[in-house]
Image (cartoon, rainbow, N blue to C red; front, side):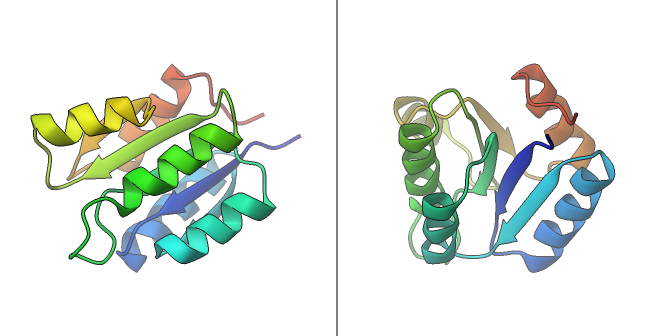
Length: 125
């Protein structure tokens, strides 16, 4: 059975690149660009991991955290990775409190994300 991942970022090029990279590694990947769509995908699918950007609209800095918090409640044991260009100690603390497993600051490469997934036991079959 293939491992399914969800990638959430408002940068469509990043989502497309990461999805293509992870699919070449053997994962099934859904990619979305907003919180509402991400929540719908979470409600209707099972994911082993979710990779989400912190800010999706630019005005609300909590969208990615809300997505990952919802994921962690629904998928116990799933890997939640938060990525952001706006990192600071407060964001890291909020991410930790929300149950986020890993926090990566942009720019982040596809191999870095793959390495972090493997670190948390999410590997393609």
